[in-house]
Image (tube, rainbow, N blue to C red; front, side, top):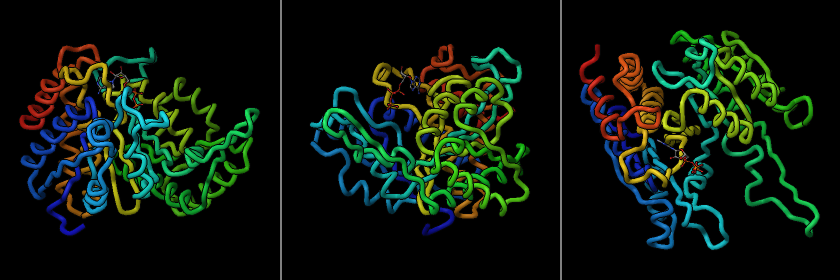
Length: 366
Ligand code: ATP
């Protein structure tokens, strides 16, 4: 990080609605930066994705990867189009290569219920859902991607990988996140999600969780087997604060949890490593609604707020942290006032109008 006031943001809008929600997020970042002051973001647009592959035969130019590595943070839209594939039929996924090259082991997925949004659970406590899933993102079962074997036509094998090094970093990250949330009034608890009753690999995972927990005596710990966790996410999701899970478990649980509080258009995501952070809405390119100004921009805008918060922590410049809080409060307040009504949540606001509403609330709070 060259400066603690100027930040170079690599922007990969990608495919489909990525091209709509990322410009929306940048509009909001620009306003938050203007209102807060004290820092400057410089955006550099870079090509990558299925559209780029269709046009050029390359999913991500080498130059994009170099610039991504050199950037202070990465903002990504969505990658993939259903009719564009590699010759072997696999999806175009340069973002997975970025994740691997940059060692982005902690996938952070906040799950929060906003007022006046459709409640999927009848229990009134569902209004209080506010948790974060930390999904390990570089190993676990996904480590086997591209490495699995089909033996004859009779057997298939995929091997899960859990390493001490990544677990230690992942758990430390989760405990620090719980500390940060505790300072903002949340319970301060990390739940270890695993299947330690059946697999040695998860008993190992849980043992490392316990070892690292000793360094964070101010944070409560809990344990849940992944099947029980799925049940509890329906039965009492408001009881959880930070959940930390292996890659595949985290993948599944975060979609389940995202569904509890609305839809994909609210699902923000940060992918964080020791030196790099990539921020993207958790949804895909949604080709069914692309180009129609119908996409909900909030997941992208909330991901941009996560980026500011992360840059604030890394640089020590509190203006960024304030700007992140301004965006989050803007969205919360607009929902409270019932002025924010994206089409995805049953309202009538397209991408531009929903973005205008967030901007207005940031510019004229209260
Ligand atoms: P991927 O595998 O890349 O995650 P996908 O096909 O599983 O993609 P999405 O592209 O996220 O999933 O789309 C799933 C559904 O959710 C589609 O009907 C899409 O229109 C809807 N959707 C996704 N994101 C949004 C959004 N931001 N606003 C409104 N609807 C959305």
